[in-house]
Image 1 (cartoon, rainbow, N blue to C red):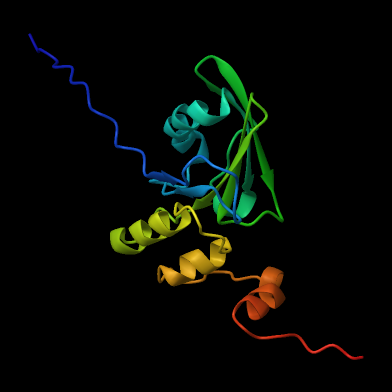
Image 2 (cartoon, one colour):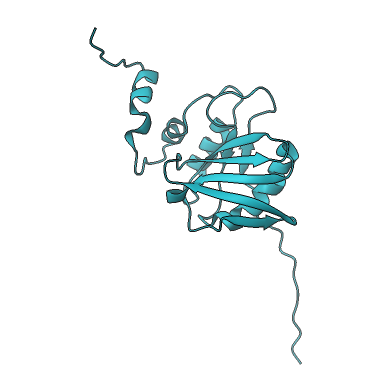
Length: 168
């Protein structure tokens, strides 16, 4: 006769840093460092924590290119959550909307990132006064800029002290 031991593994702690609750500032409200690119799996713990600020989570908007294939709906705690992937959304950000009609935008720290750089990005994005763009936060944390689109190149240039030439 074989005896099977059932152990209750404690889930890994959520790697999340939110700005203190106050008037919204900047591009993101904090940062999240998931353990994989499986959005449906990773959202379970995140939704539970964010529900404290947002009420029941109803919608998550994400960049299609940043995550493995995800379903369009997910059931969490008996409620349906819409997962909406977009081609043109910033791949380093997700937007989570709750039943209280609030929304939290989170910098997504790449799961494969080394601990020190990931921690630095989490802390920076979660700092009360931070108003940097997601790409700038990741660059400051020494995260290599993959597939960097020229999406905000002009803004970044001006933010860093440059200025655009205009005829006139």
